[in-house]
Length: 214
Image 1 (cartoon, helix red, strand yellow):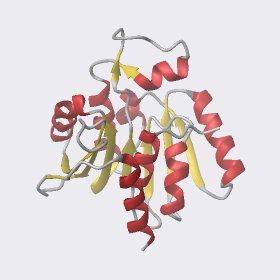
Image 2: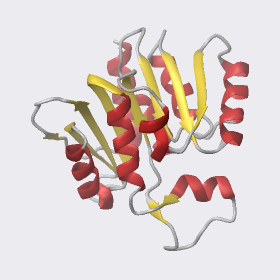
Image 3: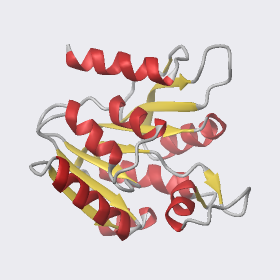
């Protein structure tokens, strides 16, 4: 079964692209975000990239059961190797929810898949952003979900690899610190950054789905 968490739903419903678009998810895991997003973004080609072949197999099997006609491919690849192993400028959009933890910091999950998906090296976030910039066409859409503590690295990484942050959406209950940041960007864009008011995750997902269905 594909995993559905707040992070997954925020990533899935933040995407809004035209039919025929090629959408790549880096670190796709079992494909929950792509499966959910494909309901709102129809007639797209979906490519999931992950280092864990077991999760890619779960993704393929799950999609076959639920949406067998979805145009979907899985690629087993380390995100660090994406610029060397995959062609450039092939994606209209790249979405990702990279690991927010750091190796050897805090408790480590005994489950290998969770351990890999939740933590990585200090450079891993930059590898994800570099891979996104490599894959995106000029003007291509970039969406990332991560923790507010990593916002400085998110901005620095985007600026270093030619992705312009356009929208920052803090997510969390009112009157409390944000628990997530949704960053929208464009490759080779000159747009000014907008920081939106913080919203609760459920309210934000509901607003996005209503806007996309009208």
